[in-house]
Image (cartoon, rainbow, N blue to C red; front, side, top):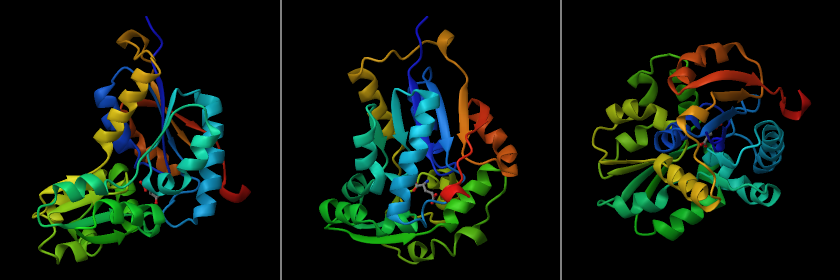
Length: 273
Ligand code: DGL
C-alpha cells in the first residue's frame, strides 16, 4: 500500500469544486483537500492588494494542516494577481487557473468570443494581456459579474436557478448572434453550464479550465515522482472553510457527491473581524 498524493484545491467558495471534480476524474486515488475561503468570499470585488495578502496568509495556514504535495489555486480572480507571490513563497508546485482565452480564440470560427468572469478578473492587466496576445483577431465581449458567482453558490446549496435570474446577466451575449465561443473564466461558472447552455443555445464551444488543470496536475505528479496511491490507501477527502456558517450544512449533499466526507473549520476572519 502506498500513501496517496496529497492535493490541495483552493478557492473563495465552491467554484474550485468544478476543478477538483476534473482532477479526481483523472486521478481518483489521490487524497484531496478542498479549501474555501468563505470568510473572504467573494474575491471578485476585492482589491488586488487585499487578494495578494489574503491568499498568501490562508494558503500558509492550510498548508500547515494539509502538507499537500501540490497546491491548486482554483480561482481565476486570485490566480491572475497572486500567483507570482505564492510561487515565490511555497516550495511545492502551485498550479493556477487563468482565463482560457487562447484555446477559445483558436476554436472560434466567427472570431467573436464571450468571456464570463468576475469583475476583478475582467479588469486585470493579466487578462487584458491574454486577450492582446492570443485573441487579437477576435472581438471579445467580456462580462464581469459577481451575481453569477452567487447563483452558482446557491445552486450547490440545492436551489434551482431560473432563466429569469440568468438572462439579465448574460444579456450582452444573448444579443450578439455572432458569438460562437464562451470562456467560463471563473471556476464557479462550469457549475452553471447547463443553465447557461439553455440561455445561450447557439454557442458552439464552452471553454473552461478543468481538463487543462487536471493535465497540469498529472505533469507534476510525474515530475515529482509522487505516488498516485492506490485504492486501499485513499483517505477520505476533507473540505476546509475559513468561517463557520449555517449554509455549509446546505452544501453537504454537493460535497458528498464529490466524495468529500469530512468538514473542518480554520477560522480566519478577514481583517481580524
Ligand atoms: N471562483 C473564483 C474565480 O474563479 C471567484 C469567485 C469570487 O468572486 O469569489 O474567479
